[in-house]
Amino acid sequence: MEKRNRRSAFGPGFLVTAAFIGPGTVTSCSLAGARFGYALIFALLFAVIATLILQEMTGRLSLGSGYDLGESLREFPRKQGAKILFVILTLSSITFGCAAYEAGNLVGGALGLEMISSLPKKIWVLLISCVAVFVLSRKRSRIVEKFLIFLVFFMSLSFLVTLILVKPDLGAIGKGMIPTFPDKSLYLVLALVGTTVVPYNLFLHSSTVKEKWKKKEDLKDVRKDLAASIGLGGLISVSIVITSAAAFYAKGMALESGAQMAQQLKPLFGSLTNYLFGLGFFAAGLSSAITAPYAAAFASSGILGWKGGQNSTKFRVVWMGVIGTGLIVSLFDFNPLAIIVFAQVANGLVLPVASIFLLIVLNNRKKMGGMANTPMQNIMGGSVILLVSFLGIWNILKLFF
Image (cartoon, rainbow, N blue to C red):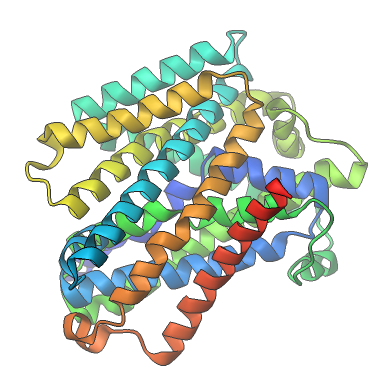
């Protein structure tokens, strides 16, 4: 019985992985491989390490203090001015990030359906938005998400198998782990980080850890869960870069449309490639389109101390607002791939707000006790935050100058 309970508790890390393996990951990794070969693999390696460090900190926060990240934002700051500042910054970053991410999810799901049908993107975007609203309003998202996550991981497994079939150059992959910045690659570097280290996952993970594990001794299980799940997610992302490099970069071909991305899986699926890739891409978009607004609502509830949970009117207003904003943005005639990549860039820019507060809380020994950060953990966490912030500021400067 004890073994069964332990196994049933295993999983918050996989929720994080399922959240970041979406249209943004497939698109950003495909573009990175098609345009720069293996050169940007180092960015994914950094993103995976950063995710492990930050998500381990959120797990420790919940086990050590008994609060999730949203509740900590409301309870821990001593000075009222500091509390208001952190609440405003975090709420704005979460809602902005989730809204940008939602636009990418809707467009990504529509892009997948465009590959297997003749209907235009705008109709599919509207339909996916309505489905997301219906599922969230009915509070049956878990059943739907399980099916969609199955499809997403089926597509992920397809990339891993194709990775073996294309027989990549291991020496070139090793070189790709050494940081280099080819001309015009910074935008994609930031997108690769943003699609993996997702701000709202910090809130999701801390909440689910709080529900799954109660004792400080469970920290080892939290770390095992994260190592397995985030490691798998990183392997999938790298495999997409490699299969894209084999399909486009090695042949001197450009990747300019969503439909072209399916060609990465042609060695495995042949004539069925477009249909299966389109179905998987749609599933990735819809599952994330349900998860992102839900996460924004949970984060806002925790930060502001709303009562009533999912039945609260304020809770519903938040997730409906995120879906509505994503729908409006996605209906404009922007390049679909540009919207998806921009969503990842937006996440990369707002990430420092949540992670800086997390670092501050983990150094509060009165609240955290023996689970507080060690000097080495502060160095690792601080380095991650500095690097992510540097990438965001550098990209903004590049856009304006």
